[in-house]
Amino acid sequence: MIEKVLLSGYTKNGGKGVYSADFNSDNGELTTPKALVELNGPTYIDVTNDMKLIALAKKDDRGGIVVYDISGDEPKLLDEDYSESTSPSYVKFDPSRNLIFSAYFHLSKVKIDHLTADGKIEHYSEVKFEGHGPRVEQDQSKPHFSALTPDGKLIICDYGADRIYIYDIDNPKEPKLMNNYIAPSGYAPRHLVFHPTKPFVYVACELSSKVLVMQYDAETARLTLVDEAEAAKDEQKNTTAAIRISKDGKFLYASTRGADTITTFSVDPNGDRIKKLSTTATGNGPRDFDLDPSEKYVIAANQDSNDLSILKRNPNKGILTNLDNNVAIPECTCVHFI
Ligand SMILES: O=C1O[C@H](COP(=O)(O)O)[C@@H](O)[C@H](O)[C@H]1O
Image (cartoon, rainbow, N blue to C red):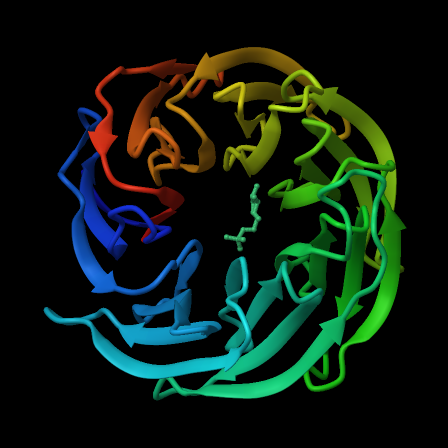
C-alpha cells in the first residue's frame, strides 16, 4: 500500500519547506522527499480533509500561517496571514468547526482562526498566558501545543509555565477557561495525546523527559495525575519531544532528543498506567515522528542528522526496530501522513 507523507521543518540550512514522499507500507520503503511548497520555516503543518495544507511560516521579519490547496498537480496559495512578529510553533485544524489553532511559543498566546470554504483565514480570537517556570528555558509562558480534547474543547500545553489549559470553545470567538492544570515544576509539558477510547491523556514533558498520565473528566475538564514514567533520563541534554499512541490504545511512544531515542510504553487496558518496554535509537534530534496509517512502521524526523529514520513496528508487542535505511532530508521537524 502506498501512503502519502508530508514532511516539513526549518529552512536555515538547506531545508526548502514542505516536502512530500510516498511510503510503501508493504516493504517500508520511502521515496526521496520532493519539495512541494517552498516556505520559510514551516516547522509544523496540518492538512484538511479536502487537501488544504495549513502551515506555520515566516516572511521577512513577520510570522503566521498560510493555506495552500494541494489537491491538484500544483499547490495553489489560498491565503496567508503574516500579521505577527514571529511564527507560531504548532498548528492544528479542527475539521468539525473549520478552526485553526496556532500556538505562539514565543508570544505567550494561542490564536483561533476560522478557515472559510475557499481557504481564507478569518481571525476569531486569541488567549494570552502569563507565568514562568524554574528552568532557564522557562523564562515566560511558552504555549507549545494546541489541539482538541475528545469532546471538542481546546487544550493547550504551556511549556514555559508548567500548565495545561482547557477552554470551552462552543463560541470560538469567546473561549472560556474551564481548567488550568499545574504540572510538576520544571517539567515543561510540550505535546500530548489522548487515549483512543478511555478518558486518559499522556503528556510528553520536554525538560524532565517524563511522560505524565492524566485522567480527563469531560464534565469539568479536570485533569488528575494518575501515573508518570521516564521517556529518558532527566539530564540536561535530553529533551522529550513528540508523543503518539497506537489506534488500539495498547502502546504509547515518546521521542527524546539528546538521548536520540523513541521509547515504547505498554498501556494498561484501563488506560491509567504505562510501563516502559524498550527504547529504540533514531538519528540525531528526533523532534517528531508518526506511525504510518497501517501502523506497521514509524517514521522519525531527525532534525539534527538531517534525515528520517524508518522503524518497523511489531503490532502485537509494540516494539520498534530501526531498519537503518535512513532517508536524507534537511532540518525536518514534522511528519504528517495524509
Ligand atoms: O521543541 C522546541 O520548540 C521550541 C519552539 O520552536 P520554534 O522553532 O518555534 O522556536 C524551540 O525553541 C525549542 O528549542 C525546541 O526544543
